[in-house]
Image 1: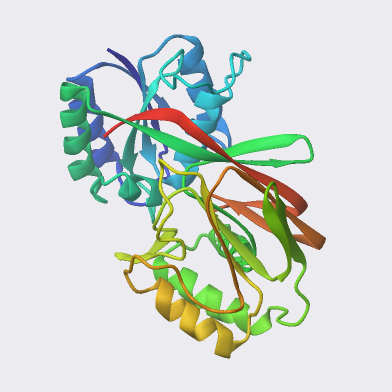
Image 2: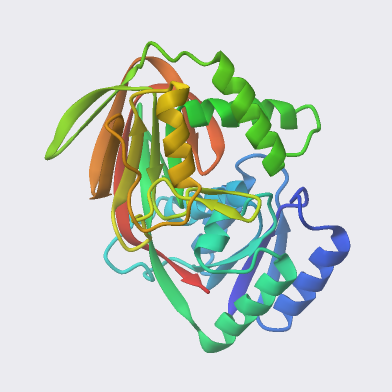
Length: 320
């Protein structure tokens, strides 16, 4: 079995010694080629190259951003290729994920340990047994562009927080759970709570306006605060369509019960008259009266006025 391992050398939870151990372990199980990512978007290019060269597996040692790039490289190969079809194994390498970031939402949603060495042990077992799981992905489309996401996207307040944290990371600070929480609190005090910009439309979906924020998920949890899952869309899963939670009020009285509910592990949906909720949808669109912040798998992608979200069933095989 030929495998390419993509290593993000800046992954926050690994060091050079740990990476060497993981590389040796994987190299003993497969015919391994190792590539280090050097710039934003590099993982996508490397993954597309691996697909074009007929690799059986593409493994990723990195965080959710590197995984997202890799997935997009696998589904959008540099030499063109066919779009995702009913058979996810046709012409597309399987994915192996070894968590190395600060949150590792996708890896944890797959049931992998959050520690890279333990996760490597689980992955090696999956390789030996050829144990695969087929997962669906989400796709965001805007202005003639498109990008797949593995676990979530968002427009509005949550993307504004991610933008602020990325700004702090640019100054050398780490993206810790505490930093996200503190940034979210500070940003909440300054955010506009009076003029919602977004409207939801879609095939067979009643139009709903007056939204400040929308979370779109491909699985649950949406994210983690340390070890604690945050579950605004508890019915979301890799085998279903996309889910959405939208907020039409941002005042403290409206927000407090929502925050309490999504921080509680539960099977029921959050309740509240100011909530907009979708489950297992194939497609919908968010439009805004002004440009709003947009994020995808925790990666800030700028401001947008219209984004269409689609579910892509059976998009990828993951060894897990």
